[in-house]
Length: 249
Ligand code: NDP
Image (tube, rainbow, N blue to C red; front, side, top):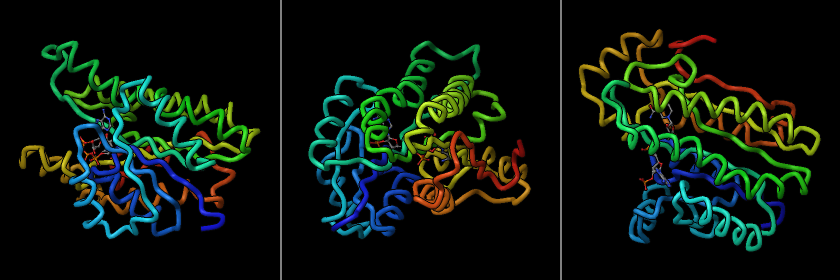
C-alpha cells in the first residue's frame, strides 16, 4: 500500500508486544514482528490467528535480540527488503528476580543483555538509516521499576533505568534529523510476565496502586502508537509513565 510505514516490534508475541503489533497494524503500519528464536512458524500462525492481523501486513522475524551480529545482518536485510523503516519499538524483555545477595552473575547478565544491550543491537543498524531518511520513531519500553527501583530487581531496574539515559542521549543525536526517541514506562500490566507472580505478591502490588488495578496491554499500546505517529513529532527524550499513579516523577 502506498505511503504505508513500516514498524519493527521486538517481543511481538508477548503480552504487551502483541497489543502493540496489533494496534500498529490497525493503524495501517506494516509490522515486522520480532520473536525470539525459541519461537516457530507454528507459533506465528497461532499468533496471527489470535491477533487477526492481515497476513499481508505483517512478517515474522525470528531473531535473538541479544545477538549483535544477527541483529545487524537481519536488520540490514529488512531495510533492503522494505526500503525504509519508520518505527522501532524495543519491547523484548525478561526478568530474573532475586535479592542482590542471592543474584548470580548469570541472572545479572541475562537481564542486562536482553533488556539493555539489545537496545544497542536493535537500534544501531536502524538509527543511521532513519537519520538519512530524515524521519524515525524509536520507542523503548522501560518500567516503573526502572524509575523507582524494586526489591529483588537490581538487574532489571538497572537495565530499565539505563534505557531512559540511552533514550535521552539518542534524542539529542536524532533531533535535527526528525528522529524522535522516547520511553514508555508501564507499571504492572496484565501479561504472562505478571501472571507468573505469586497471587499474594500481586494482590499487594494492586493495593499499592492508587487506581487499585493493573494496566492492560492495550493501554500501553495506545501510548506507543501515539508516540509512533507523525502527530508526536515534537516529543523526544520523554518518558511517558503509565502506572495508575504508582510512581509520580
Ligand atoms: P512477555 O514475557 O509477555 O514478553 C516478552 C517478550 O520478549 C517475549 O515475547 C519474548 O520472546 C521476548 N524476548 C525475550 N528474550 C528475547 C530475546 N533474547 N530475543 C528476542 N525476543 C526476546 O512480557 P511483557 O509483554 O509483559 O513485557 C514486554 C515489555 O514490557 C518488557 O520489556 C517488560 O520488561 C516491560 N514491562 C512489563 C511489565 C509488566 O507488568 N508486564 C511492566 C513494565 C514493563 P519469547 O516469547 O519468544 O520468549
